[in-house]
Image: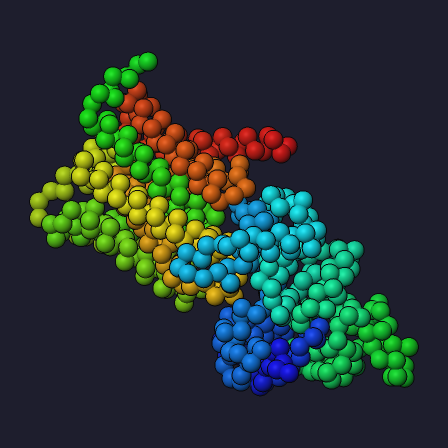
Length: 257
Length: 270
């Protein structure tokens, strides 16, 4: 099967300082892949290259076998919160509907009946129907986040890409959000990035650590060497207070004991 | 009612038509300017229009035609540079703002003779708009309405979330340029009403006032157009009553409306 995402030896720099250094990553279809790393480690840059928003200086990227720009219509994207104006005069329904524009044709890109139907379906699925006519600024953080997810889902994507999806919400909302992702995992591939190791739920099938360079063992676990290479500090500092299952149990004296 | 007799004068009917077209253009395009936070770019474009007025004087073309051509070019130039300027956009806009004015002043200095209605380009005079200009405004207004109707969903997507519009394969660069040209066209239309110096206020104040009371862009546009009509016709009438310049009166009325709406929404929230 063609991998959902194939990143090979991608490098990217800005003003002479390297952001990504020879990064390779394969996300297989059906994966729920988490990329973890500190802020400024290049996570968002990597996503933008995968989405074709930034050109890779070196290396190749393919999305379901296509060049990034040609693969976009198969991708739903949940950008980092606060990248747009929450006071924009747009209702929840209009915003979610706008996610159908990737399928719209013709110079006017008018919405068809199908676009409205899918929008109602997704609003229902994410329990947003009762908020359809509100604007974003009148919603709670968790509701706003579900609207942004809904906009990504109306395009019926085969791959869902999430950038720091839970950074602005409280813990119960985060737990609820991962329940939603677990359901979505049945029908699509998911790639999410976060600076927070805590987002790695048991649903994640593969994990990588990214801080300019990428480290992975193609397993759902983070190992000490990945953490050490990524954060460049002793593991017990990072691991403090984390659920045990994040780490392997076989390391003697390690944090997983 | 005092002064209702002035409606019988042709120049006053022209002024009402001008206010009507100007309100439609500034309500629709002003809404985009406000929600997309293009206020400083629009300020730069409108002041640069003075360069076009000056070029018109120098080469013996109708100054408004000069302003139309020059302002459109400036808008396109800003649009192209915007992609590359990044953080420096602010400075770039300030440079265009001042350079346009400076070019206008030099051109008028070089032009033979005296520039008779220079003052009306700077501060507007809605009572002196000739019938030919009203026809032009009507055509430009129709053009704006047609383009916005045709591209409404896409312009909404681009002004709401540019990055996401790119991910959806919309022609973002083109749409942004079209929007800047629409701003330029609107600015030129408004010059007759309030003048180059005050254009930016008429473009943004009705939309900014409307914004606090609407939840959809369409509604914002309709409310902005209505507010524009109230401000421009109300200001015109006030200026007639107390015998002061019309453009400045319109702007002060619009400012009062904007400040009033802020106070009302504060009082409601508090």
